[in-house]
Length: 216
Image 1 (cartoon, rainbow, N blue to C red):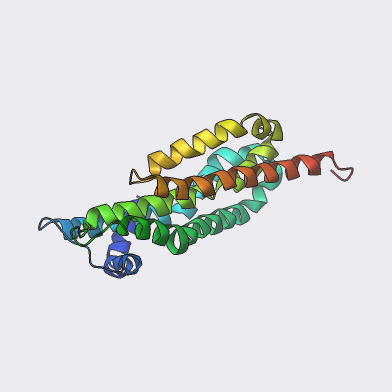
Image 2 (image 1 turned 120 degrees about the vertical axis):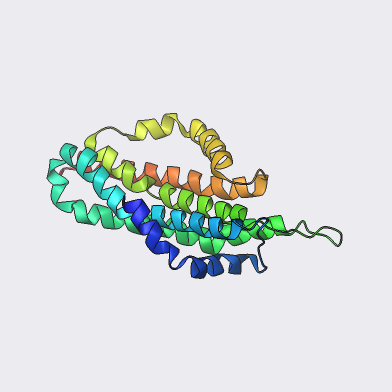
């Protein structure tokens, strides 16, 4: 219900949001049938609704799953949700200003004198929306690792044993969530995912070190 409500509200601003995305492309996008322009704005609004609903989703996960297992941190629910929102926004900002321009520029660079790319509005929005939401959710990994480490469900041993699997897993995940089949965009997605794996390892190591300290 929250996603649908926020999607409906986002539709009022969908044209402005689309202009901000198309600015990365530096060219016009096209609609291949009469309904594509409208459906593209609906799709864009849905992506925005999903992104904007993150605080509510984080609150539901915190209240229903994590807070009952962390009684000493129940009063920190607001802080946890705020950090989750900031991390998600950080992933979206990184994607918008760094990864999307690089990925779009790489694909558009294959044009030649005889080949001009006509970019579908729906596919362009799908490309941008999938990349940005995937990056935003990926940035939640350090916070989730911290909470799982506090519960006792995650330790540094897992990261030490599974780092090879992590490289393979990040590569496969990047290939799955990247809307295009090219290696360049897959690599652009895989590198941040792998970096987040090691950041999460550092977070869990810090939690364990705190437990071992005399004050703990």
